[in-house]
Image 1: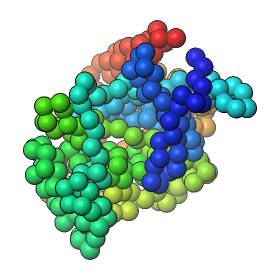
Image 2: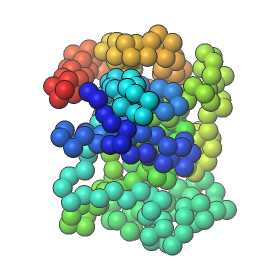
Image 3: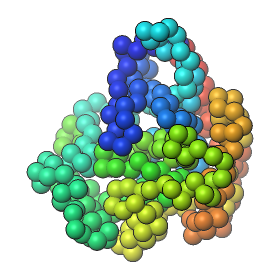
Length: 296
């Protein structure tokens, strides 16, 4: 597969710069290229561990692939993550940043300035529920921030939390997306191998820069939501795919982060092991991988 750089778009992140992203019109899938390190592997690993959880909300399932990009300097091999377009005909995405501006005429930072963490969360949840009619948005938000704390995702700004409006004007929470900044994937910012030391430098978003304070505030309001199976581990297929594209060093960083988080967040680990783990996970991964390979 060869993609011309002129067909790509650059996704502007307020905190992470421009990342190449493009949509294949024939397959209705999005491709997002690694930028600061191994973002695609982080997305893929997040998909893998969410399959081993009690999550009830939809989430984007990411695959990984190496492709050729045609640029002014010639062909370049790059790693990217691939995901199906989750929008249906007539759907439109509204980020929480845009929702604040539309409903209040000001940014989230302006609206939430001076409030406690818990009051920021309550304000945001009330705004979303009152303006969209979505119920229990607080539980969805808690799930999102619990996940971020577990995978050390530092990029959950208000443009990475969104709702979807369908053609009839009804709203629903957006599938959980954009986890590429997780697992210390920015190797320029988090160089080194000591996960226990590196993770202390990771700062959360959007209500506070401390993961624990954010999650605790959400749980006090809406209760604990996300649980992983006791047997949580990167699946065999995920290990093979990540190792094949990124090598042992990156696989070890992701694997060690999962193990570290299991020890740091025992309240998020269920007493129940995943039933038929190898069969269910491998079958799901094979379906996603084969679906991608059939296209090219």
